[in-house]
Amino acid sequence: MRNKDVEKLINDSFTEMNPDLFSKILENCPKMNDTNYELSFWKKIQNLLQSKKFAYSFSSFILVLSISLFMFIQPNSIDQRVFSVIAIDVNPSVVLELNDEDKVINVIMKNEDAIIIVGDMDLINVDYNIAVNALIGSMVANGYLDEFKNSVLISIRSDDMIHEDELKTEVTQAVYNYLSNSAINGSIITQEYSEDDAIKLLAERLGISEAKAELIFEITMLDPRVTVEELALLSINDLNVYLESKNYSIDKIDKVGKASELEYLSENEAFQIALTELGIDEINITEYEIELEQEDGVMVYELKIKTISGDFEVLVNAKDGTIVVENENDEDDEDDEDDDQLPTEVLSESEVLSLVLLELGIVESEITDLEIEQDQDGGIYFYEIEFEYQDQSYKLDVDAISGNILTNSQDETGYDYKDDDDDKEEDDEDDED
Amino acid sequence: MVKNQKNYGPKISDRLIKKVSNNNVSSFEELYNLSSSAVFGLAYSIVGNKADAEDVVQDVFISIYEKAHQYKGGNKAMAWIFTITRNHSLMKIRDRQKRNHVNLDDVYDVGVDNNIENEMYNENIVNMILNTLSEDERQIVIMHAMSNIKHKDIANTMGIPLSTVLSKYKRALAKLKNELEVNGYEK
Image 1 (cartoon, one colour):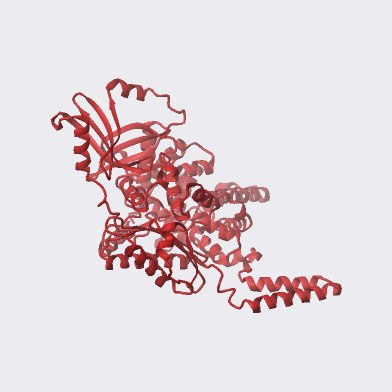
Image 2 (tube, rainbow over the protein chains, first blue to last red):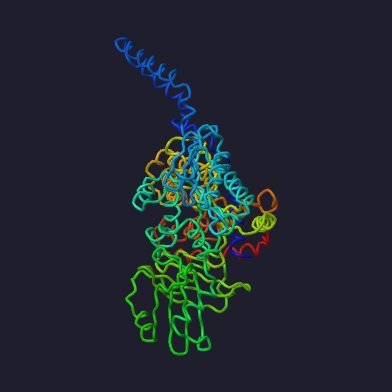
């Protein structure tokens, strides 16, 4: 019996025993009954009239009359209330505001590219799905979306959370289908459209859309080694590639399709460029590692190469192959790094390993080939943990102070590169689990 | 599209709490549906019987209704709810002690007859947890089993070090596994 099985047993038992007390609770929450805005408004008017003496009745009458006139003059005012928001970011960034009938009531162009995309299209009072198709079509026609740049960030908010989920699914599907019909294997990241003032301020400061600000903010919350300033420089497609390369598991994000890397060099091409630059003969290499990373807002391949004469670290621009940074480390340098003063709150190797294995539901005695190394990036201390478990290789970066898993090579949560049948099988397995 | 949720516990967004603070009934009901089992489980593990646990659940959600506007965000909604649950549970015990000076062991729903196994299955599991684990162990295991919150957040909620939470959690699960196997629970 695994830890997860025991926890599931506990969960099921309490869930089944838990009685439905919601109606009882609601009786003690009087304000919760004020769901109908108009009703409460009229109640307020009624209260106002009742509470005031005759001397005020005339002014109350005027107030009611004024409001009635206001509503008469603007008969469609309720329809114009923003009920849902759909933001589409490629690099053009467009926000559609919808009423409660899912018709577009406002189109907000967030940057100059968006003005090109929208052009002279009149999307007001159009169904949202027609508007989304029109915008994606324009992005394809204007070359913002193609097989080299296939990523779209969709951000959605609705006053009705169930409808919000429906919109997320439907818009994602619509965009994906449109791109498929245009011979583009699209990759769509879907998230909640933030109403947070802090995100608005961040977007303003970085000169990017709120949707993109929300996405990069979530990444930095998960991995404090990267900064919002760096990530803001990446395009949506680069961000998508970066998310995949780091295998980030971000709760608020769903994703379909794989980001296009056609603009990128292959790992082998980057490797050959690095060897040429460093003048290293492949025969002298004892060990090497290549990872797709970002450095100061530029996508790079990070190559760590160990040779019989020394260790090298090179960053190669992932698109044009230029060398970004080149370092040679000798043994003494490594020792110096290890001797850096660590913050006192850093967890020990055994603590961090226990924490990680508990999170993963893995028993320590069942893992093999364990390697733990401490590293530091951007002032953040973390452990690189590698091990084998049930014929799977795990490679994780774990925050050395909080114990949070920053990246996990086995984690594909939120990413779906498979077809629907495979998903179904996977879901069934999860259910069984 | 694959939904991004591998665990079975509730995932409560800050936005949902914000909507509750705006007195949105459907959001309040959604919050209740997502978290009431976890609240009930934790309350039960502290107060030790179903009737008191149900009272605590009601108190907790009325508190959430009254205090949702005070919630500070930071994606820690479940930890916040657990903190409220612990407080109400401890208050319940204090009230009970004031009223009756009852020995806590006496009020625990223990010793359920195993003969009617199917009907009492859930109660038996719950009683096993109550009987086998210490108070801290119960709370840690139930908070982790009933929600997505991390051990680090449990440590903050309970005001004890992370390392203590981890060791107690490990010990508790080992005890429960043993107890489940001894009693033939191989579900």
